[in-house]
Amino acid sequence: MKKVALTAAVLALGLAACEAQTDETVETNIEETGEAMEADAEAAGEAVEGEAEEAIAEMDEAATDVEAAVEGETETEAAAD
Image (cartoon, rainbow, N blue to C red; front, side, top):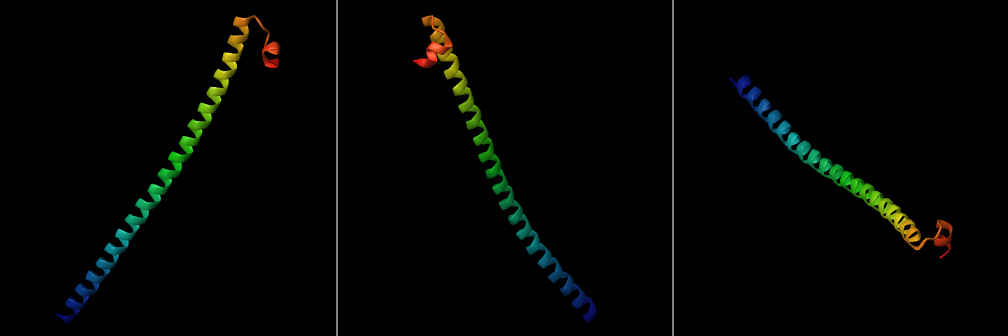
């Protein structure tokens, strides 16, 4: 009977240790996932910002071309202004 009680106690302690380790693992995974999501969001934001800046530059160039065409100037003359 003592062997059964001892075995049950050892198994209970082992299970408790696994549960604590599992909780820590879950917390660690949540933290790592959060950090990865932040990094991904930051990278996506920077990519969008870069694309927006490029689009603005293209629109500025197109606006300059339109202004030059309306005024009857060549691109060289418009750039000189």
